[in-house]
Image 1 (tube, rainbow, N blue to C red):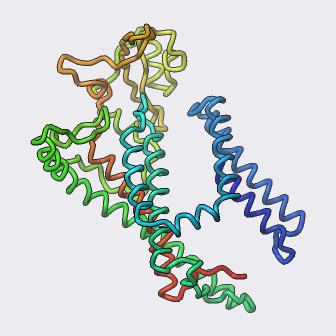
Image 2 (tube, one colour):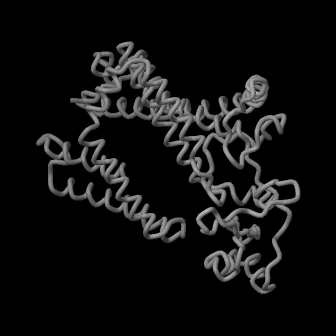
Length: 370
């Protein structure tokens, strides 16, 4: 929603230019209709797929709209602040990113929300660091670094138009490929380097009576040799539940055999998933693979009471105290969290700094047509 609002503000600025194609009412209102459709499809899609409630979507829309308006009004001031700050800004941004990553609540179900949050936070951190570095060394727009334009920008002849589009496509493919390559390479490097580095650091701080900060529910590096390889995927999947749960040891026992067969054959979740109160102390986890097959896990929840007498939910522990992991068959590793932070921070730097600088050096043009 923040993206929709920000695009609308750009559209308004463009429409005020009498020489712009959006200056005509037809083009302007057509663009507005596209933005409304885009924003509406996001909200309705989340509701239709059962991924969020009405309250979630209302609160998220208000938050996103506020962010878009703040960026539209105070964006230039924020850019000036970042450009004029000293070294404490990038260092503070990196430390804040690590702190928020460590303190982010762990979702009850394995869903993309944690990775989405870490991706957004790390991208913002990488962008702030890149913006600061560019201003520090005179490689940003206010410093006059970007002067070239994409060949064919005159747009006088058909050849100009074709050349401009050719370079535009080349730049797009190059930029996206650089991001994919970074993700593939750095992920493998971090999964190899971080576990022994964590073990070494844990040994160092352990000798002085401290311990490394770690996320709850995540396996520390002292308990594994390496992060299991999950294949090279340049584009992160939106939901890996099916693949992960398919490795779990079968179904939980349903109280109703008919519902079990129905879930297996049709992919429809039992009522206990939709209405948790119908089966006390039980939560369902699962996903369909698009062909009717479904993997479901019956996770027992025990009730605890805090100091105020309020009930708290906690996953059932086994005899060894291993929580949730045994029930779901899904294992998380501490090295993977820091890997995500490094990968997405790097994507922010590549997209907002290294790629445009490279294009400018090669004379491929970054400065927009006036």
